[in-house]
Length: 150
Image (cartoon, rainbow, N blue to C red; front, top):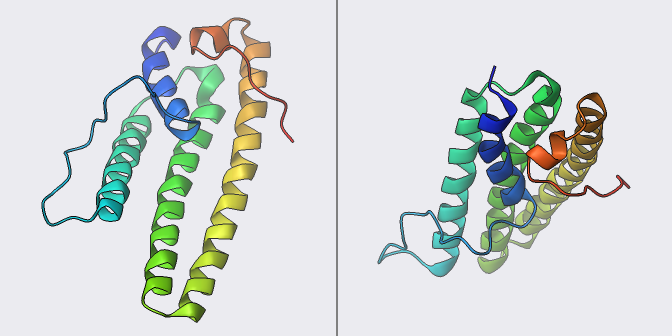
């Protein structure tokens, strides 16, 4: 099991990626390839970042009071990757004139986004419970305040 102070940077990276990123930090992608469109580059670089974070989280042993939140973060990163793929497929189907395919991918995207919202609400509850179990946990993770789940 990892100490809270050792776990904090990993948690913070995953949480920030799912909730707006680190605007002051340079991207950690491998750069745009010469044969790659901007859309392909953005999808690939985000996919790489999400995959790296998910692998790091999956290999980490969180502090006991954060196990539920940890599992939810892993699931949210997976949903983010799936949503990106569904959106890319929807846009490609539309671009190719396959409107029925575009609608099908849109339905899949809606399902993923709904599941992500549900998981995010569960994450908020899990973080509140971790704070109740160990006051100062959220502060140690660099989270000043979390919103009420809706």
